[in-house]
Image 1: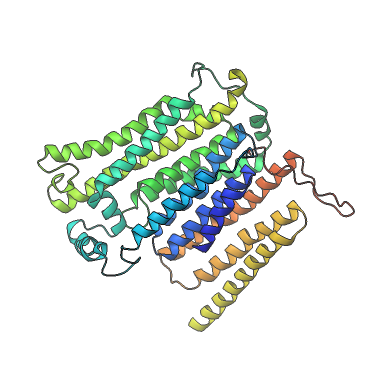
Image 2 (image 1 turned 45 degrees about the vertical axis):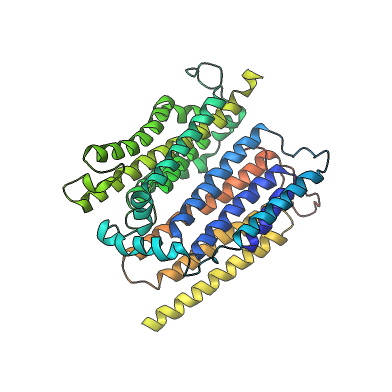
Length: 322
Length: 115
C-alpha cells in the first residue's frame, strides 16, 4: 500500500508525460499484486489486464497525439490547497465512526456476506462465488457497469469520429511501412494471436469454475486484436473486423444482458431473476449467468476495440484534418 | 523420491530468484539502454522460467502441471520477443548501443515511435 501511495505521488509530481504513463502501468501492476495478496484473484486478473495492458496502451496512443511534457503551471493556488485540506479532513472525520477495515462486527460481515457465502452453493451451485455474486446476486450492478462501458465507448466514438467518410481507406503512414520489416514480431504474433483469442474464450466460459468471466475475457480478446492491428497495420485490422459490425455488436452485448432480464420478467419472476428461466432454479441460474457473462464479454471487447480504433484512427487522419 | 523432488525444486526456486534479483539490480545499474534491456530480459525469461520449473516439481500429474507447462511455453516465446521489440524500437528511434570506446549515452529515443 505504501508503494501505491508513493507511485501516486510520483505520478502527480512528474512533468514528463511518458514517464507518467509508465508509472500508471506500474501502479496498476502493484495494485494487481496487492489484490492477489488479499486473495481477490478475479479482481487482480481484471486489473492486470485492463490497467497494465489496455490502459497503458491507450494512454500511449493519446501521447502520440499530444506533447510529451506537461505545460508549466503558471500560479500556485492557495485557495485550492485550502479547500482540499478541508475536504480531506471532513472525509477522515466521517470515517472515524465507521468500523475498522475487516472487523467482524461490521454490518457487511454480519448480514450480507454470510448470506451469500452460505447460500451460494445451494441456490446457484456455481463453484466460483465471485461469479455468482457478480452475475446473479448483484446482477443489477453488473448491468449498470456494462451500460457504463457501452456509454463510454459511444462517447469516444461520437467525440472522435473523423469528419471524412468512413468508407475511405486510411492513408498508410511511415509507421505502418516500418512494420513490414518486423519479421520476428509478425511470425511470433501469428503463432500467438489465435492462442490469445482462444484463451479469451476459455476465460469467458470458465468464469464459473475459476477466476474469469466476461470482463477479463473481453479485455483479453480486445488485446489480441489490438496486437494484430499494431503489427499488421490499421487497414488490415479494420478490414478484418468490420467497424460498423463492431459498433452494432457493442450494443448487442448490452441488449443481451437486458433481454435476459426482460425474459425473466415475462416468465413470471422479477427483472434479472434467473431462477425462472429454465425448468428448475439451478439450471435457470446457470443459463442466466452464462448469457449475462456473454453479454458483458461482447460489450467489453467491442468497446475496447472502438476506443483503440478511434484513438489511432485520429492519429492517421491528423494530416487531413489540420 | 519425494525428497529429491523437494530439493530439486528448492534449488530451482533459489536459482530463479537469484536471476530475478540480479536482473533487477542490472536494470538499475547497467550504463546503457541495451544492456539494461538485456538484464530485464534475463529476469523475464530465465528467472521466471526457473521459478516455473521449480513450481512444477511440486505437483503431481494433473491440470495444474499442464497449466504451468503452458505458462512456461508462452513465457519462453513471449519474453525474448518483447526484448526484441524493445531493441527494434530503440534502434528505429536512433539510439545507438554504447560500444567500447564511446562514452556518449543518448537517451532520446525511448518514446516516440509506437511499435
